[in-house]
Image 1 (cartoon, rainbow, N blue to C red):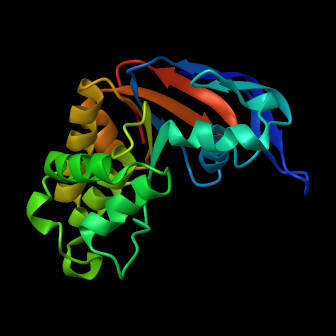
Image 2 (image 1 turned 135 degrees about the horizontal axis):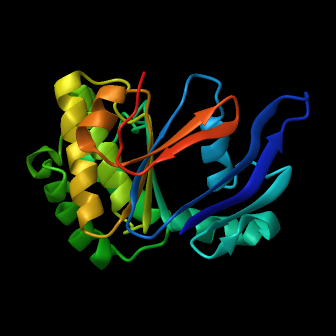
Image 3 (image 1 turned 45 degrees about the horizontal axis):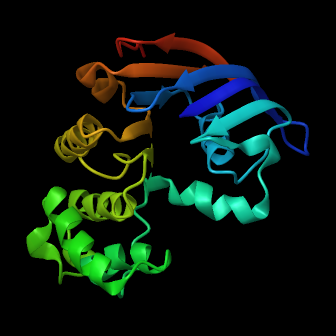
Length: 226
């Protein structure tokens, strides 16, 4: 599903963001990526999403060899993923329904499939009654649920969540991770970057710890120390 094999990334200014990192995330796994600010977590995600290329080593995601990925193949790679960001990235002048619908429209989905899929996914994240609301009318936790619905609507095999609880309160943070947990139980692979050790310890999933660009630990039971 996601395989890093001896991956290093050096930027043009000489910064070594990742140094000989290797790990594999199997289909259907749930893994947390943890590490201090500047440890290399963001670079790791950019490499997975083909926003950056490796300096050394190889990455395979959903059967795509990212070392030899052509520009034409990038949309197909990204269509196989759903991305959830810390800052929600909702379109303010669109309703909840329209925000989620938009993610299907850009993939040229049919009107029939949109009308069937969008209400289903909104119900899945508990926002069926908020379809006509605008982002400004929602709490932070509800906005993140919209972002999650948008990530789910094209039925990706992987959800990548980049600090999805960073802008919401602790109670809502737990609900978002619980929702990701439920999605994972349905077979979707989840990769979540977080700095919240409380959540990591509570959910007891695999933890990949990045420190100074290196793989510091790969803990199967999800326990992590501050």
